[in-house]
Length: 278
Image 1 (tube, rainbow, N blue to C red):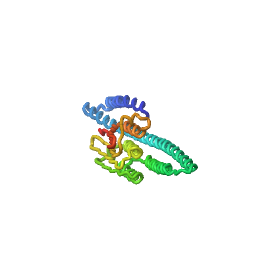
Image 2 (cartoon, helix red, strand yellow):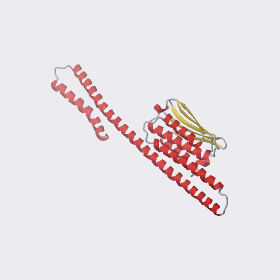
Image 3 (cartoon, rainbow, N blue to C red):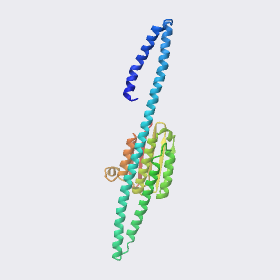
C-alpha cells in the first residue's frame, strides 16, 4: 500500500465505520438501551482502531527499516568509491615519484655517481606505499560489516596502525557508545578517524596520538590529539591539497556532527567531532 492510499483510507475509514455501526444499532438492535449502545460503539471502535493503527505502524516500521538499509547500502557504496579514489590517487602519485627516482638512479650510475640519496628516497616511498595499500585493504575488509562494534573496530585499527607506522596511540573510552549511535553513524565516525590518522601519519611527524570517545547521555564526542609539528589551520583549510581534513569535516557534517580543529606550530593538533544525542 502506498502513502496516498494510506492517507485516503485514514480519512474515510473512521467515519465510514462509525456510520455503519450507528446504522446497524438503530436498525437491528432496538432492544439495546442508548447507554449500552454508545458503550458498544465506543468499544468496537476502539478495538478496530487499535488493530488498524497497529497495522499502519507496522507498515511504517517496515518502510523505515527498508530506508535505513538502503541508506546503509548507499553509504557502503560511497565508502568503496572513496577508497577506490584514494587508492588511485595515492598509488598514481607514488608510482610517478618512484619512476622519477629510478631515472635519477639510472642517470647517477651512468655518470658513475653514488645514487645513495635517491635509493633511500625510493626505499621510503615503497615503504609508505606498502603501508597505504595495506591500510586501504583493511578498510575494504571492514566497510560492509553490519551492526559494527565501534570500540572493537577502532581498537583493531589502532593496533594495526601502531604496528605499521611505529606511532604510539592511546585509546580512552567513556560511556555506552555502541547503543547510543546507529550503525550508519558508527561507520561514519570510524571513517573520520581513519582519515585523520592517515593525515597524521603523512603530515604531522607525530610520535604519539591520543584518541578519546566519550558519551554522557546528551552528547557523543570523538577527540584526536597528536604531538606533531602542527600547522596554520586557516592556511591549510584553504589549501586545495588538504583533502584529508576537508573530507573529515564534510563526513562529520553529513551526520549532523560538529567539526572542531585546533593546531599550534610545534605543539601538535587537536580535532574534536561532537554529536548531539537528544
